[in-house]
Length: 362
Ligand SMILES: O=C(O)CCC(=O)C(=O)O
Ligand SMILES: [Fe+2]
Image 1 (cartoon, rainbow, N blue to C red):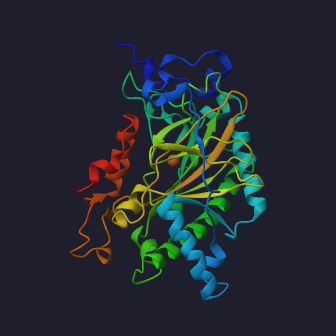
Image 2 (cartoon, rainbow, N blue to C red; image 1 turned 180 degrees about the vertical axis):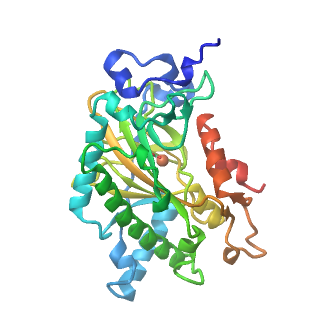
């Protein structure tokens, strides 16, 4: 029988503990290693920060207007921003991040109980592990992940949810509820920016049964950070992503005009970064663009991030919103069912390509 063990790489955490050099299948293509390293430029200005309370109008119309102008500028320049005054208790962020770390620190067997491989073989969307490996020459990322579908709540597959640390499940539930409110606040502010008919227009675009995936990314230290990527260049595929950044360790980079810029940790507490996804790019007919980003590793410290991906109802079709179209602004993206978009995104991601290119109307 053919040896297809290449389909089932060990976790990067195990690998990192065992090797002095990353194996060939983790080495990124030459053209991505320009200059011999993955260094990035410093952002010309600090990461834009949006005060969610102000932009919602709770301080009055004038302040909301000012904050909305900042949001517009952040969306047009970078496609991402930090959100503050978002209503999530600091104590929740302070507890969620260490609980994620504690999960990755469990012995392998404890984590494998929640493996992303059903019966040890068949890759699925939820659980602990890596990407689906479907080609022998696929270049792998230097990270392990725990991916869980947290919404709709009645579709949670709790068998994939860690029982250790003990606080994990309750924390993730609370975190999900809190992030859901923040996501709604952001989508309302964006709807106002776009002058849509109703503040809830973008929220409604997700449908009644929008899907939320929580993805915990774990990047072990790498002896050759100049040769691998923690996560390859990509756009997130959902409507938007809320990324809980590592408090201390940098790694996220964003591409703008051909230059990679490093996104520094906020320096105090945990930063919550909002990232536009491909689904929102389509819905807004390209008014908001999804930024290409990646994560690099380093040789000394592990790094953790937690991404909440908000996607529409899987059965819903995504297309440019009629309100944003007219003769001068015809649809620039094809209509696509959310489920198909997510599946296509995984295929493109594996090939290091971007799904959004295939959806543009030429
Ligand atoms: O770890 C990071 O900073 C980025 C993670 C990311 O881009 C993702 O999970 O989609
Ligand atoms: Fe991402």
